Length: 292
Length: 264
Image (cartoon, rainbow over the protein chains, first blue to last red):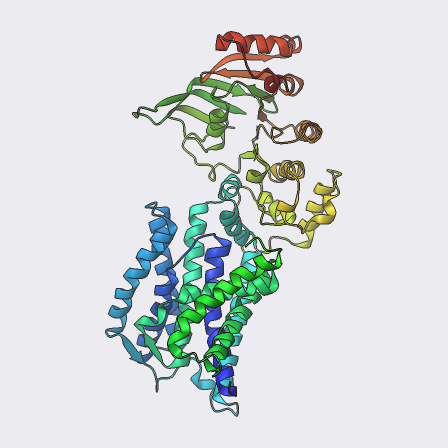
């Protein structure tokens, strides 16, 4: 693997760290299997790309993308909480609907951002090579997101969200409005995923309506790899695990695809992903004494 | 003070499975009174507790806690007034959270929860002190996950949790039923201490006749969704477990086949 390919993998891992943190919030904190992310990731990319091309400040474009993601999350939460649709199914409905929404937003399946000013453009050309600047920039944003989510989950408000996912009956007895926590948590989760999408569009120079396929699996893979490596030792460690899991996942994929020995090609990506997640799921069980 | 007037609860109204769980129950509990509630399975004990906690919304009638009408309020909305310990130790606390996080959660029961850190040094010290009073050595395990504790330890922590924030009523739902006899006694002694120290208005549902008569100021027996016995003061002091069992038999019109459970 070349240096550029390595840092490319790190960069992509950092972009998808936002997805991993979002998936962690939904799946682990709220115990809500949310597949909306397959739609909210390209939604974030689409909204950011279209706004940037229209001349909007890229930071504002990213903020609007986050709001769009949050709204997508609110729709899923409403289908589940208000209309009592099973959480998984509710999120699939939103995900499917978002495919059409994303096409409407972009007006075509693919939008290029090659020469537009992005959040990162001001940082290019200051002596550091581009393939270092991108992961560095995204990495700083990831650190900010980790700290914000960590402090939130350890606050009084965050504690009630964690209680909602862990023991809803107890949470209600403590005066927590569990429905509101689901709205809030799923909105926050999808806002982060959409931010990941917005950064994806800006670092890769395009937004594509199909770029969301399998986002959930990648996010889950990162969460599970993180848990496998670090175990359950508090919120901060779990969040750092999500980030490192996401980076390691990308490096592993890059290694698998670039090693001539294995004879894999780019189209084998999904198979390798499934294999990696399976290994990450089975490994801890084998280590614990093999009741697989 | 709690006042429940003419509460009726019907489950599955209009279906073939319609069940009248409470049929016109009226009960007034004075400030600081400790009431024990007994009754066979299906008598309506849990429903009554649910009506007070907000889990069950009454079909008819009125529920007042203090001077506030809470009849239509859900569990979360009235949580500031109601502290509760559940029968199942797993229900009353969050296994995935640490002991101190559970306490932090309970310390804000019924209040707004902001973005400030849930566990500042002051709160940590307070929680540690309150847990140390249990003499279970848990004060050195404050950061352990709750699911590492035994059922009895969890109930003891649940009792502390119930008293961290103020409340107008403490509801105990057979909270020693899942424990071994030794631990059950420890929890009852602790309950007694907490209730009398803090002069809490308390409603305790129990399956044990012994407990029902040994603790509290007043005993209420439910049957078929109605109150069939309400004793306090001197007449309660002379009442024996055998008398209660005789009453149960009469009520059921048959011989009980689970005496052991009732005497327990």
